[in-house]
Image (cartoon, rainbow, N blue to C red; front, side, top):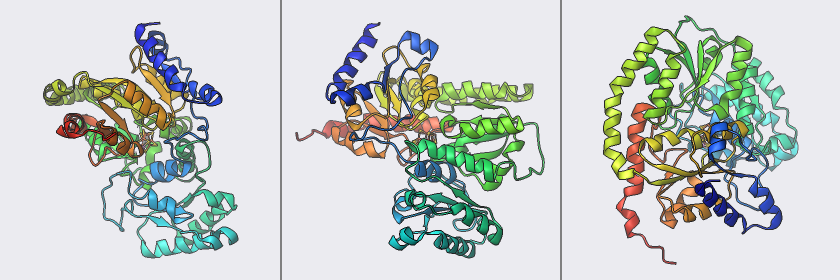
Length: 476
Ligand code: ICE
């Protein structure tokens, strides 16, 4: 065992001391220290995708968040009904910054919050009739909406409403797809099952239902980019610049038609593996479409990915890719020259969802920053296996960490930057630790592609080197 691994292990042991025996035993399985052997083999012993421990604070979301918030919500030309009490829709309204082109209320409904607003009587007598009435109202108020999805909140499943029957009836009556999604928040252990459920409903109701007017040899689909702060746009232009034609975006700035024509793609490009690997494999099994993962965070990974994508096509695309890389290289070098001296050696801790805790590491490293600890809220075993190769000897990896876990580590590791979500943000500000929101990019972005890296570098510099941290002394 190297000294670094020993030190990290000692830290985790100390952290676990605070817990009662049973909890300690349970939480212990959610930590792993990367060492040379595991980095090489990708062998992961961490426990993941299991129920959070009652009594400790988790930062996970629910299945409804995974379906309505993540996968379906960004499909812009449909109305997504938050079916149940008003709170779930209200509190998830407009928080994910998934941008979409179009006219609000005409061909883009992403900024709206539409709910069946369950009352006590709906819980007692059932909400199916109300849901039907709502679907009719939606059709009347927004005649250009291309479909409706019914995103179930917890009570809908608990009282046994038959939203499938409503979906069928309304599809026939209104002449647009009305898709029931059984994403009640209580299902599964996190938002992850919501992704899967949403993928399954796309498979059952939309996949393969539309035709592409004209097919080309360079047709690709972007799968698992939600266009946070314009990420998918910053990615799409690079793919187009190397000569590919993006026929669909799943699901940032996407449409139901794009979901329906994706079986015509020649190669599916997966950015967020966690939330959409199900559809990639389904499209492969059913239509034989190959897929590959790529990573557009930071120039090193973007360049690697562009080359790997181009390798699936002919020499024209490969030459284009080299030309595009050369074109941006100078600009990227300038950004690194400007920011790296200000950020070199800064220690970063991350705790993000199910993908970015590994995908963003390269971007930080391009700026000379060091990831000292990272982990996920709801990743699965395969995500952890893919993560290990991105780590260094002694890096701490955690799964579904508690508020205490990350506070303890941020203090002991004396970090310079915490990258996590809005639930963590203000705690760290109060602790005097620079913080970036790595879900919504705070109010910034895009972070994908070459354009995104310019914003990323500036944001990290602004967060860490702001003079405000020198003015702040905690009064306790
Ligand atoms: Fe994928 Mo916040 Fe997106 Fe990932 Fe997923 Fe979520 Fe977004 Fe985060 C997401 S789809 S909403 S890249 S659920 S930032 S896994 S937790 S890291």
